[in-house]
Image 1 (cartoon, helix red, strand yellow):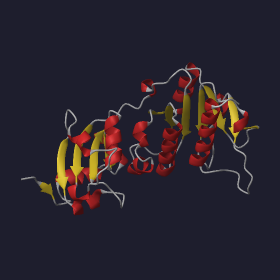
Image 2 (tube, helix red, strand yellow):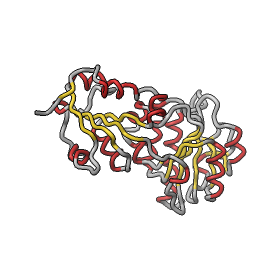
Image 3 (spheres, helix red, strand yellow):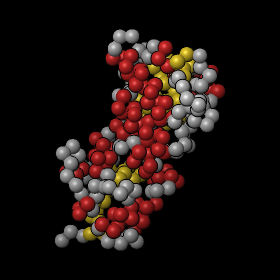
Image 4 (cartoon, helix red, strand yellow):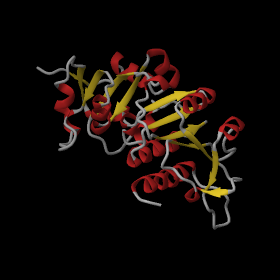
Amino acid sequence: MKEIITSIQNPKIKNLKKLEKASERKEQQLFAVEGLRETVLAHRAGYCIQQLFICEELMKPDKNYSPNELLTQHPSPTVFFINREVYQSLCYRESTEGVIAVVSFKDISLAQLPLRENSLVLVIEAVEKPGNLGAMLRTSDAAGVDAVIICDARTDIYNPNVIRSSVGTVFTNPVAVCETKEAILFLQQKNILIFAAELEAEKFHYEQDFRKPTAIVVGTEASGLSEEWRKAADKKIKIPMRGRIDSLNVSVSAGILLFEALRQRETTI
């Protein structure tokens, strides 16, 4: 007979709850992933799933993401079945698919980024809002960027809100996390042009040529990019502002810049 966990006091459930804290994630080198799609995307990206918690009564069929893909992997994770009440005490979303995974950290250093000859890279400096980071990862996936580099981050990429708002694209994008000075040196050694988004720039983004190896760098809405990035930039760019405010949400700005680069690379300008 299949054993079903019915108490939130179960040690496995209590430890899963601990992973909501960044300090626990860092100490255990583990994080939680909620949702069938997100868990399958993590698995396909080579992340090691240590545990699966499944609520069968909440599972929904999906032609693109199958739980069998997780259950038949080798080596297989430890699978635990939980009831609806326990699952709902763990989940963040109202609409879920009955799957939560405990996953091991992965190498997110610059050295593992698989850059091609004419790469398009998004660099994000000092991001602190998980929702913004998740939105930029989702946009990066849609634009088909070669890598996302996160510098001096004030939130970790395994924050549940990052995973949720990215719709699992935190796993589909090649991602590296590092300090600004490391990123600048890395891009310069790879001969990738640095385009810094800056309100005081003289040129608009559509006046620049993004068809060469390109890194688009965005900073915080409050203070913009650091002086390090401003000095390292090969070009400074800005987005036209026709209203009364002088800036956009950083995730919106990143989307505009990335898709202009994509447009140029797919058409003749």
